[in-house]
Image 1 (tube, rainbow, N blue to C red):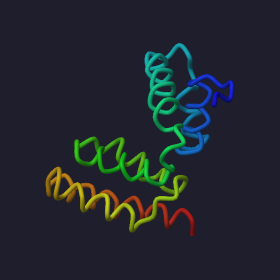
Image 2 (image 1 turned 45 degrees about the vertical axis):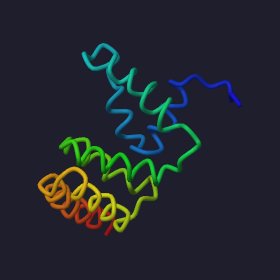
Image 3 (image 1 turned 120 degrees about the vertical axis):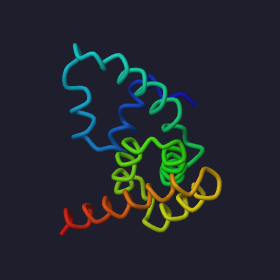
Length: 130
């Protein structure tokens, strides 16, 4: 079942598909940067080992990731992944459902803040697309 690609290669492909080429290029711009080992690790572990698995489609991974990030209060990453819904196929309705779960299982304040961010980011995305 191996396609001959390393986890780093698979992770880079998936990360680029989800977050976009510009984001990935910015994060890898300077290999001497203090964060370079971190970027390499998350590309391999998160993007290669988890996001690149073919058992769950990107849409569902996106929804799970948004719910987890919001539930844990990791709102900077939540914003990044909310913008990535343009590439994963997760819709506004999908995000609403994920955040409704956050409200019940992780807390209303976290979901409330995530809804506020989602409102702003979806508006920005709509304005950018004309």
